[in-house]
Amino acid sequence: AQKITQTQPGMFVQEKEAVTLDCTYDTSDPSYGLFWYKQPSSGEMIFLIYQGSYDQQNATEGRYSLNFQKARKSANLVISASQLGDSAMYFCAMRGYSSASKIIFGSGTRLSIRP
Amino acid sequence: DAMVIQNPRYQVTQFGKPVTLSCSQTLNHNVMYWYQQKSSQAPKLLFHYYDKDFNNEADTPDNFQSRRPNTSFCFLDIRSPGLGDAAMYLCATSRDGRAEQYFGPGTRLTVT
Image (cartoon, rainbow over all chains, first blue to last red; front, side, top):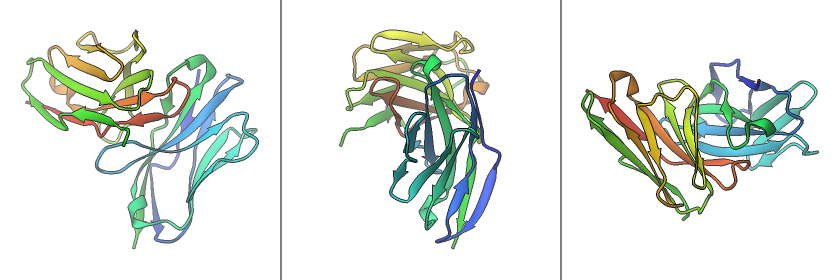
């Protein structure tokens, strides 16, 4: 069975500070992919970043980076220099080789940026 | 810009009155998904199409049906909405099911 765990229901961060959102996963698949999505209050899910299980380097996309620690089964999202517009719900998700076209989501972390 | 479009953005229906939500995509992706999301919860996959192949989740109620008449369009039919079906419904696409999913803006369904 596959499982994604996000242990931080909510976080408050001061603007311009860096923030780390935690995500741990469990899978028996040898090959898998990890995703992070942002969901603002408007409701649309926005794809942020992807990490493949065999990727040698941690993924980065602008201010977003994924701290991938395979042995610890963690895939934390790091947002550098947070902005007010980063306030949103953040979901970690995983696609396993055995789950074909489907992904499973964690329960999410609500991030609030203070001015 | 290539995108995923959902119509309508807000839908109000009466208890038991059939309703159809629509999704279209200009990405030419092979896979289309329908999710149900209730407040402060993660999206829950209802079903997905890989091309014309329909894949239903085991716990999706029979009340929910879907159609994909062509690559670009996918519909979610709720045959007899109950109060518990009030939720945000998200459509998503993926190039091949292994790549990232791109979501539409969602349709917020209210059942009165």
